[in-house]
Length: 97
Image 1 (cartoon, rainbow, N blue to C red):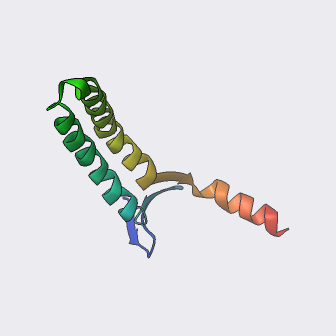
Image 2: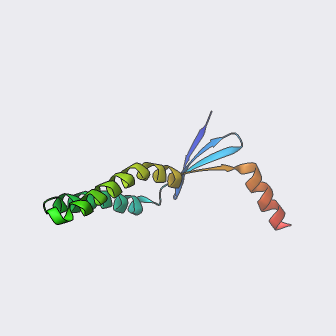
Image 3: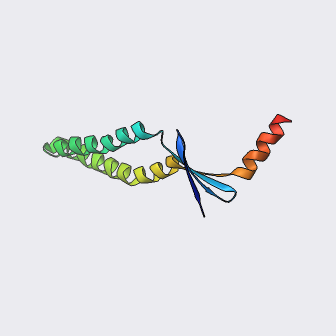
């Protein structure tokens, strides 16, 4: 059965010799990352009002959609770290000797 621990910087889920760390410190980065696609889509929409800027508007929509696609993957990679606690203990012990 996994054991859940709430620390100052992250949540730990211990499963045997492995521990999954869910990081709490990326809150502000994620808020900024949530705002950027909105700004990109608003600017792209305004560009669509002008014939000479429609191509730039399309590019902004593609960039905004790519960011919306990539964002969840990045959040998962930043939030979850899987570590083998036996290896960490062995490395720590060899450094102390």
